[in-house]
Length: 254
Image (cartoon, rainbow, N blue to C red; front, side, top):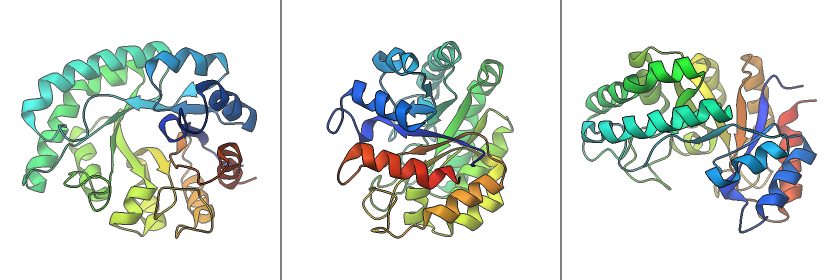
């Protein structure tokens, strides 16, 4: 059995494929430990069905993020509020974003992003909340996004130097940018605080119609001793509950 817990991303399924109630019931029945990226008005619904909240966004926005110092005061206020809510609701992770590169060089972007996260790190530590800097691809889905390589985000976390600041390693996005998923996980796993999955290309099911071989990837994650959440963030091609069951079984490693 896997050492980690599994969660499912809200936006991929509701309201276009399942109602909020259908989603939480299905997730609980299948055995998921959590849901994530759900609007605040549904936090109570998740808790009522025995589901934790694995992550929500810590601040706005993907484009105007931490790599621009002009955004730091706004983001600091947003993170302060979200950390307090995360502590109250026992939300494990708050997702943070580098923002678009806008011709900024890597060293400057890393330094600014680390400075921005440093402002909230102590509060996050005290609250037992992890700020996870999300890796996104800049090739297909998020043009010009700065944190589009693992080494970039790891260096940000190294400069912050807080156990409450880690990387959100999105397997789908990093397959597009880098590949070499298992070796990367083995090399940088101490810096990883959360995982996301999806099939590539297309961000669909974790099946044999896409290029990632997820079973050994999950085995590699488990082998690191990781005990956090692996969040499935894919859009099912067909019946959504069957797709959630298939992904859960694949990652469970029974």
